[in-house]
Structure formats: structure tokens, C-alpha cells
Length: 281
Ligand code: ARG
Image 1 (cartoon, rainbow, N blue to C red):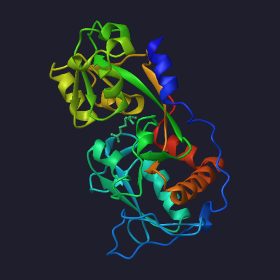
Image 2: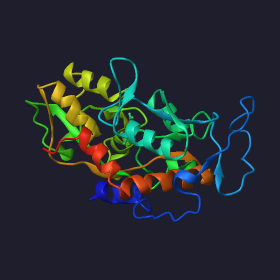
Image 3: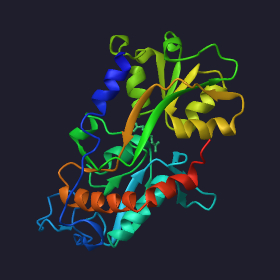
């Protein structure tokens, strides 16, 4: 199976890495550049026990908050979701306060490398390509790419997507897999439309502009819940690992994040956050 092989390759090296770091947990000290300093201009000259952040006392998380239940905007304009809650706890452990910066997904992924955010947390899949500019934390969740179609569609699984039009969110792994050459298990660029958000891709499906949407399973289930004329196919397309990304080479911050994240995994906090958003079905 081409697609399965590819998923295994994308996820290569992402699982089971254990970080044993001197600076982990609540003892990490958040020394930061002065406000006027350019955050990305140079590597911080610090001991390995410290890390710097883009803004003093803050942990900036770039994300695309149209991805329920990982990140979404509440009616009052604040943010919630699994990633937001985990990031809030990580920031607390590091002695920082969390700032959520909502933007297009591609911008959110690029922000850490550009010094515009400290980390990207966005149901973000670890891929070899992204590792060129980013370093990933240990994985905190599994993502699965699934297919959404209308209730009366004759599409039953990935093989039926050939010659169809597929909607995806731009810059996501769903887009990357589907737009790949058929020889690599994709459907070819001509068969894929990239939308700004998952929800706009779903709107296009409802309007009959595409035959299917390929997107991560949890958001897919949320979108279908809100649109009863749609369904999620049970055939899973690809399995992947979600992690937090920092600028490549920002080992001090990554170590601190991993330390905090692993404490939150070990004491059950991450699981209880997940359970509060995803009810067992
Ligand atoms: N897991 C997919 C990826 O990394 C999709 C993530 C989209 N996230 C979002 N917040 N819109 O490409």
C-alpha cells in the first residue's frame, strides 16, 4: 500500500523519543530579549538551562483556530480547544503566560522559523519536510486523515477518489497527500482544491463544488455533526503524529516544552483535556 508506506515514512522517527533533560519542568527560566531586540536575528547566548521567548514573559503559540476540537474561537473572541488548554498548562509550568496568535495555517506553521511565534501548535503533523525549518516536540496525539462525503455519495473509500474533485485545507498534510502524483498514492494536483480553512472546504462540498473533503478525523466529525447531510467514511486514509513545533535549532525552548509536556502526559492532564473535548463514541 503506497499510502501506508508514505505515512510510515512521514512519521519516521517521531514516536517514542524520550527527552531526559536537565532543564525540564517548572524550573525553566524565561529570560527574554529586550523588547527592541529582533527576536530572530541571532541565537540566544544562554546556558542550556534557559530559553528565550519572542516576547518577555509570554509564550506565543501560532495556530489556525478553525480546527475543532484542537483550536477554535469562542463567541467572546477568546480561544479554546485541546491544543489551547495543553499550551496554557505548558506556559504555566514555564512561568509564562500563553498568547494565542490566530492566522492562516501556512503562516502558523512558518511563524516559529520566522521568529514571529515561539511555537506552532495546530494539530500539526510531524513531517520530514517541515523538519527542514522546525524541530518537533514529542508527540501528544495521533491524527488520522479521513474522507467526508455527502450522505448519498457513491464514494466508499480512497480508491473511489480517483477522477473526483477533492477539497482540502491549504498547506495541510491532507492537501500534500492528495495532490501528490498518482504514482505516489495521490490523485494529482488537478484533482485537489486548497481552501483557506477546513470549514470553507466543507462549505464547498455542501455546495457541490467538490466531491469529497480530506481532513483530520476529529475536525471532520465536528463538521459532520454540524451538517447532517454529510458523513465521514470509516476507511481511514493515513495515520500521523501531532506535535508542537519550534524554530529549528531552538533546543533550549524545545527541551523546556518537552519537559513540561511529558509531565502533563505522565500525570494524566493531557488525557483529561482530551476527554473534556472528545467524548468516547
Ligand atoms: N494535521 C494536519 C497538518 O498538520 C492539519 C492541521 C490543520 N490544523 C489547523 N489548526 N488548521 O497538516
